[in-house]
Image 1: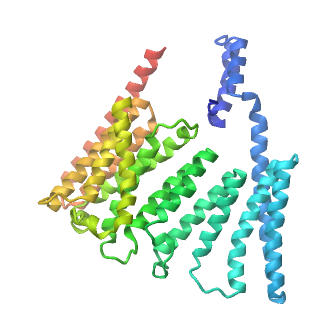
Image 2: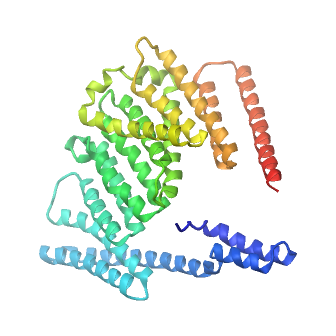
Image 3: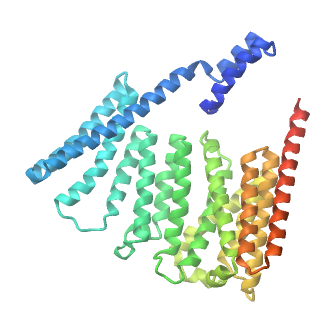
Length: 449
């Protein structure tokens, strides 16, 4: 299986360092050549040029599209209805057809790809213009759904990452619009099966395109789709409870997806976005419940909550839970690193806290549990920063710890001297923690020399 190359920035720095190491005699010419071939350092100039050309083509295509639309708009009222429709479809088909020909059968693939993306943008503009021509007075956000369907079809057919990004963004706009201004008019974004559509359409796309950007947007769209499914209309007085339930369930699904062992090469691309979004979602749910006022207002009903959301939503809630439990079971049977398993277990505990209120449990006890789970997540992330020697995880855990301390300090009425002592203690703990982290990394580096 072909391994994915590191980012271009790392490869450029490596190329510069190889020259220095060869000059100093630390590496022999054959070793330098071996590393050059391994990381394809000779292709850096061509890749940079190709990326620049792609950017130029994209910007140029968008500018041309804006110019054409502006020209047509200047004479819009003078044109007949048939002429308008013909021009709209002609522009879209010309961009798609010309782009496909240049992309597949000529020496200008990037120009062709840019024209295909332009065709997708024109398709979105056509939806709005045709609605204006025929005076269609419907939910305007439904036009974004049609745009998303068209962009997704092109993304699958031509293996196009920009079209996939357009499909994800427009699907998110459609869903968000239906959840706010136009929820009273219906639409599948308010229905229980919308998250299923997200899974069916976009998860295979992640594996096909192998793009970090597509994986990140798909993870974010999954969180929003769960919120839309569980919360329904935001005017519902109980919607806040279902929002927190949806966030915690989405975190289970994302962590399970990211940690799931897969023979596909895209599994490595999925792991970071899915796990990161899952950790953010789980921590957010615990953080919101850590406020006494919020937990008192939005605490789960108890076991009866599952009787009020309907069988379809219960089935949807089971999917991330089963996935998370399945990954945990495989971890115990086949073996998995302790850190991912701990993250998953904390997320499961947060999901249980958000979905079930233990009989006899008071709001105060729920708040204590939320704070404890939040602190546990911070500790696991700090351990992960040491295990993976990753400063980004370390600073993430530090940020979460500071956020909790500041929130608790500002939430309750305390004297200034007590607040001063808390902040001083946090500052000292941060400095000590940073020094310990750097010392640990230094000892690890020395042990590998």
